[in-house]
Each structure stands twice: as C-alpha cells, then as structure tokens.
Amino acid sequence: MGLEPEQRLDNPATENVADDITEMSVTSPNWVTTRLDFLVNWARKNSLWPMPFGTACCAIEYMATAASRFDIARFGMERQSFSPRQADVFICAGRVPFKLAPVLRRIWDQMPQPKWCISMGACASSGGIFDNYSMVQGIDTIMPVDVYVPGCPPRPEGLIYGIRLLQKKIEGETFTDEALREERLVGRDGLFLPPERVDELSEPFGNSVQQTRSA
Amino acid sequence: MTVSALREAFGSAIVRHAVICGDTIVWVSRDRIHDALAWLQATPDQDYNYLTDITAVEYRDTERPLEIVWQLRSLARKVDLRVKVALDKRAPLEVPTCWDLWKGADWLEREVYDMFGVTFTGHPDLRRILMWETYAEGYPLRKDFPLRGHFSRAEQTRQALAANPEANYSLEELSIAEAYHELPKEMRERLRHGERGFLK
Ligand code: SF4
Image (cartoon, rainbow over all chains, first blue to last red; front, side):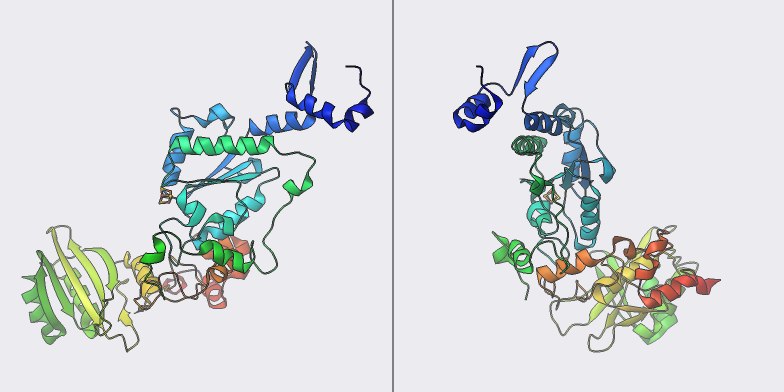
C-alpha cells in the first residue's frame, strides 16, 4: 500500500491492520521492519538477568528451577546475577524478616532501570504462615512487585509460569513511558506505602484470623 | 550419682531434683548457680565439659517462675545433665554468666537476653543477637508479648526500613567503618577499645 507516513498515523484503521499482521517482517535479507517497542521489549524479556534473593525454603525450589531439569536459561535467564548492578529481575524467594527489610530495599534501590520484581512464595507475597512480630507481611509493603507466585513453596513450574507472566507484562510495556521507569523510593515518612496501606496489607487473613492469640 | 554429689557439695542450694523421661534435672538456687556449674565442669568424676545449650522457659501460668536452663554434657562420660534456676518474675531477671566457664555461652546468653530479657551479669557483650540492637518492642518470647508485636505493622515496617543494614553488625563482625557513626554511643565506646577490650 502506497500510504504516506502522515496518512498512516492519522488513520486508526491502518494502524490496527499493521498491529494485526506479524510484528516483525523480513522484507529482504538485510532489512527488518518492526515497531521499536516490540524490538526493545523482545530483547528485554528474553534476556532477563535475575538477582536471586533466596531467604528461606523457597530458595531450594528456585535452585531447582535454575538447575538443569527445569532450566530457566531457556527463558533467557542464563546468567544469575549475584550483583544488583547487573540485574533486571529481583526474585525474592522466601520469607523476609524485618531485620532483612532494609537489605532487600537497598539491593532493590541498587538495581538499575529497567527492573522488575517477582515475589516467590506465600511468605514473600503475604507473610505466609509467619504472621508474627518479626516478619514482613509481604514484600510489597517495602518495594514494588510485578508478579506474585503463590505456593509454599511454588513448584518450579509455578515460578516458570510467573516468569512467563512477567515476560508478557514486559511485552505490553512501552519504553517511551517514563512513568514505568520511575524510581519509587522510600518516602519522607520512612515508608514505601502510606501507613494505612501497610497496615491493610498486613492484616491477618484466612485461617490466621482465627488462630491469633495476640493482643 | 551427680545429684547426691551435688547435694553433698552444695547442701540446701540444690533446691530439688527430678528424673523425667530419663533426664536428670537439678534446680539450683540462683546464688550458687555459678559455683555449681564451675564445680560440675571442674570436678574430675563429673567432667561436664560441654555446654549444649542455654535457654529459658516461661510457663503459661503467670504465677510460676521463669526458669533458666543449662543443658550440660560430659563428652567423655556420655551423660547429660539439665540444670535449672527458677527466677521470680517480680524481681529483676538476673543470673550470673557462665561465659568464663564455657566460651560458647556468649551467644547462647545473648539469645536468652534477646528473647526473654534475662540479664546475665558479667557477660562481656550482652546485646541483642537475633533482633536488631535498636529493637524497642520488648522481649518476643515472653508470654505477655503479643504474637504480632506491640507496634502497628506500619510502624514496624517504618522502623525496619529506617535501619542501616550495616549497623546491625559490630566492627569486629564486619569491618564496615561507615556504620560506626550509626551505632549507639555506648557501643561506639566499647568498640573503640576493641570488642573484648577489657581482656587485654
Ligand atoms: S512460602 Fe513456604 S516454602 Fe516459601 S519461604 Fe515461605 S514457608 Fe518456605
């Protein structure tokens, strides 16, 4: 179709057509036409470098996921990054005590953008069975989380599913949206979320409502 | 055998004893506990040379005293002995340290202090070991401590995030000089002389 560039932009119908046909088309051996967003997201999602933060039993399942049988290298996570400076995905595998919270937060802050976070397991996502004085009730009270993987511990398939979901999420991003890459720091009140929100997220739920003997 | 020998050596300071599930338990008065432990360690035919654990028990019945437990073992004789001291909860919770007898008591006593608030007099470095040093909610394993702590979750999270992760360690544990100024004053003072400075 011999459309001028302006016409393409103005005509939403044409845009949809362009979206519907394949994202990337090879027109000659030397040329690839694609949307830049698609290319960037494709590259990002397939070369995620995880920063594994294994704090408890879930880390065992994480290791299983990384080892040869399940092998997250198949999804571009070949390199486990044990330095936050060279990592893209923070994977918190296990429970987080309050004593560890500032460590977690500092590592997250040290990771450069773009970065994502997977909260692996019931404990990291909600405090799990540890609804007590020493445990962070979900790491989303101290840092942003992209994907929650439920389970105690999640099976490697579960984590891989979480990773695939994260990849899907990345596909939908656009690198021109600066809001996505904004650093969400700990605020002046010393909290990452408003206090009411932290209290709300930390409320006991499920069985734990009945079990409490606390004041 | 141990019990009769103990009674002979310490008389009425041995409050009572019991054999429960094959374990010998001896209650000693607080005043003589250090002497009794030293005696158990040094007397050749006792030879309790290994301190397995120190812990404390608080019973749900609030009238009952809090008990400090020393679990001893003689590696050569292959026997165990449990020594207890009952502490009245209305008085300050204090027992003498046995760090001078077994160096391994250092962290065990710190743990009991951290969780139950028992002061081990004479301990070289009695500070919290599991909770961070500035933890202000009390002693978590005491029965009057609510399961979720005294503060709201938001306050707990705020205090946790405000902590300097490096300040949880002494300079001896991790030589991070930057954390020095974040430490409490008396701790800085102590560290300036070296963690175990008084030993020379
Ligand atoms: S979710 Fe279960 S397996 Fe994972 S850290 Fe918590 S207790 Fe352990």
